[in-house]
Structure formats: C-alpha cells, structure tokens
Length: 408
Image 1 (cartoon, rainbow, N blue to C red):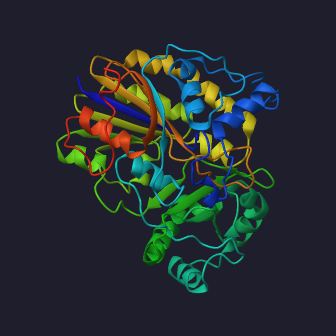
Image 2 (image 1 turned 90 degrees about the vertical axis):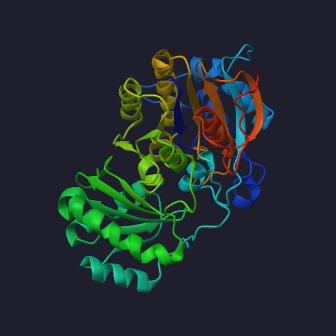
Image 3 (image 1 turned 45 degrees about the vertical axis):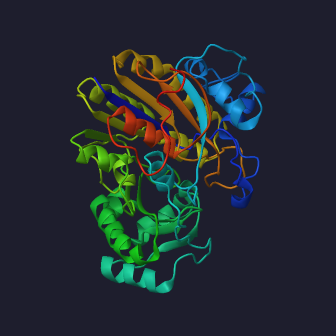
C-alpha cells in the first residue's frame, strides 16, 4: 500500500541558514542550543525533566548526524553514533520569508519568491484606515494594542481592559500577521472569528500572510490562550503537492493547523487537534484507516507556540522528549509501502533574542518500509514535496528533486 505521513515539528530548526544574518538571526540553532542547555543543566524545570536531552529514537533516525552536517558540531549531550535507520539530512529554505505558510508551502513543492507585507513594530503598527474600517464593519467600540508583541505578554497586559471595554486586542509580530485576541466568553468566540473574517478581507490588498484569531479565557492576572485559535491564510499562489494529489484521486488528511495554512486547498479531510499529544493521537487514529494513495499531513504546533516564541528552553526540551517517546508507536503502524517524513517549517530558537522565528535549516528524516537509506546531506525544502510526488505516483513537481532512490 502506497501511503505517506508527514509531520512538521513546528519551529524545529537545526542551525542557522546561510542567509540568517540578513534576517538578523546569525548564530541561531534551535536544536543545538536546546541540547546545550540540557547538557549544562540549564533546562531543568520543577516537576519535569532534568539532565541531558533524552531523545533515543530521534538519535537512531539520524538527528545528531544531520545537525552536525548542518552546523559542523555534534549536539551537546548526545552520544556520537553511527548505523542510523532510514535517511537523514537537512534542508535549506529558498522562500523570501521565515514564516509558517512559506515553510509549509515550500515543503509541499511551492517556494514563495515574493515578500509578504510586514507591519512595523509600532506603536502604531496598523494604518488608521485599516483599523477604522475594522471597527466600523465589525461593530467594535475600538481596539487595543496596535503594536508588535508576544501574544502571551499582550494578553497579560491588556486582557483585563479588553474584557472590561469590549475592545479586542490587535497586534502583529516579525511575521506577516494581523492577530486579534479576545476573551471567549466576554467577547464571544464566534464574534472573534467574524471579526477576523472581516480583517482578512480588509488586509487582502496588502498581501498579508495570515489573520489569526487568538481566543483566551480566565480572569486577570491568569488569562490563558486556548486551542481554538483559527488562521485565515492567503491561498497558495499556485498548486502544491496537495492540490496535485487530490486532483489525481488521492486523499489528503490535514491534522492540526495544516488545513488553515493551505487556506483549505488540497485537503479532503480535516481533523481538529490542538496540542502535540492531540495531533499524535489523531495521526494514529487516521493512519489505521488510511487507504492507498493517502497523505496524512500534521503539524505539531506546541514547539513553536508554547516554547519557541515564549523562549521556554526547558519546555522545548520536554516537548522533544515527549515526542520522541511516541515515535515507536507511530513506527509500529507503518506497513509495506509506507513512507514517513519528519521536517520543520523554520526555526524559533528559544535561547535567541526577541520572540520571533529564526532563519534556520530544517531537518529531513525519512523512515518506514519505503524510506531511502543513508545520509541525504544538504537538500532543498522543496525536495520533500518532490519525494512525496514520486512516492505517491505523481508527475514531478516544478520545484525540488526527489531523494527517494537515495541509498537503494
């Protein structure tokens, strides 16, 4: 049976890209710096993990070796080894940005050659005509924020005022995003979604990558963002692997935020899942029922949202270890003809300055019965899509080179 599984470890970079300095990200290394912090005892947390990073399954799949190929250094705390299973390498992004849509689209064979519109950090970040139109059309008493900010920080700072005034919080970041945060009960979840739909239409002329609803609950000073986030993404500018597979009669199951990232294009089934564990639970359930020529495509968002952007090194390390513990169960589900791939869309080094993504190489790990073998070296991100196209019986994509026959 010819099936494919792709899991994006959101933000799991493996070393600064060649053009990282032009993004202000020289020296970034999400995996290397997390491993180093663990090795020196700097990633312990109360009631949680301690000591060097414990990821034996990712190690046997070649994570340590691909990181060395990317950076020239073996990650601290990991034992040097040989005899890896499957194939491993690192990939370089060619898209103009280090954002979520660009990374995912390029993995599926569609690099993004143009620059998204970025709002200035402000305040103010957004042009008055845009906010005036949003207030008028959404029937709002006004908005708060209007600046670049960390989502958790701005909700902690302005959440109480938002609840009291009925004004949602609008903010941006280093990505091309217009984000709207509001309390699920006080403001209303559906009202938040409708506000974002209006915002999506208003920012369309500006080529803004995403409008994101950021609902939160609770009371001050302990507001918490929920998993009912929703993204309205600009549709891909051309067909991706997903479109091609569906057009050829294949089946694409999008798990987590994948469906939003591709603007609901090229998917035949969407499974809602928030946390990493929920995503992995969904993968296991869907995979058992997946038929021939199926692609299951999932995003583990916690690495990025909960730990990378919040610069939580210990949390990032614990999430990697938790993911690693679940790998054997996923591997046990793979049957003859199945191919599984792990990669990432960008970096988000939790030891780096600021709270934005970092321009990094991403891992490429292939395993399962249909996986090639050996070290893949340096690849293009679009090679992932090209490999999937060959595996699933599609014609070659416009970008990328398949590595399916590597080591055979």
